[in-house]
Image (cartoon, rainbow, N blue to C red; front, side):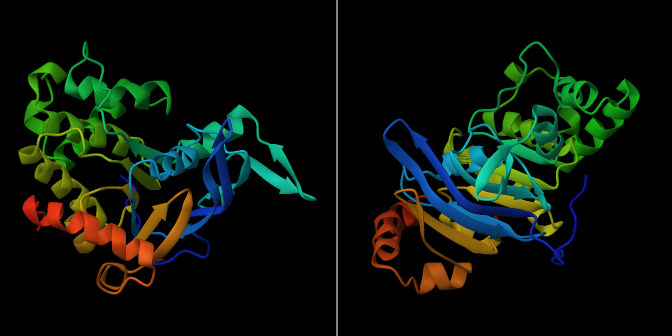
Amino acid sequence: MDTGSKTKATHPMVELVGLCKSYGPHDVLKGIDLTVNKGEVVCIIGPSGSGKSTLLRCINHLEHPEKGIVRIDGQTVYRDEVHGKYRDHSQKQIAAVRAHVGMVFQHFNLFPHQTVIQNVMEAQIHVLRRSKQEAQEVAKKMLATVGMSEKADFYPAELSGGQQQRVAIARALAMDPKVMLFDEATSALDPELVGEVLQVMRKLAEEGMTMILVTHEMQFARQVGTHIVFVDGGVIVEEGPPAELFGRPKRDRTRAFLQNISHEAQSHPVEVA
């Protein structure tokens, strides 16, 4: 697992420049600029429908933006801008950059007919072309990282939601990503299972993994995030360190959002320490 370090590289690990995405007449992203340095944990917060998940999906090319540049570790993902015009990359070029990005979704998407360890081995064999033996060794290490070694021979249906999500994280880590994207990774879980997944994410952060999270877990964002980004209406309204954005927000819209969610956060605390 390439967790990197918290030392800043000469270029950002992830860089978004003027990112725009529309669905028909509806503009979902309206010129997003964002820089994520190596080892940072960037938490994206905001109301439902604000464009947070679309932003993540554009980074990983699950959505194709109409305008803008996405760079991963200095390499553009989709296209280059040449003399003011965009030139799309080939699918082979896109796949080569995407291979360095791990993504964990709300729903686990494990293969039900495969055991836990087979699920973690699958993409290694077919995408990275690792041998079965090498893929198995990597899978064992990643399952140990997420505390799932004892469940290696179980099937997904035999696991809790939290356990399935930890397997999904192990599967992403097995691909040696430079950056991990988490799209509401705990939102589909029962409340009592949220903490075990957040513990794994906290461990990755402490080991220096570059992470971008869309999350409603404000306590986790306060404690683990290095940079908070508040998105609303397809734009970044405000961003900054956790203490600043949560403690001294500058924008009225940010203050209103935090006030609206504060009661719920106090009523349902999640222990991640």
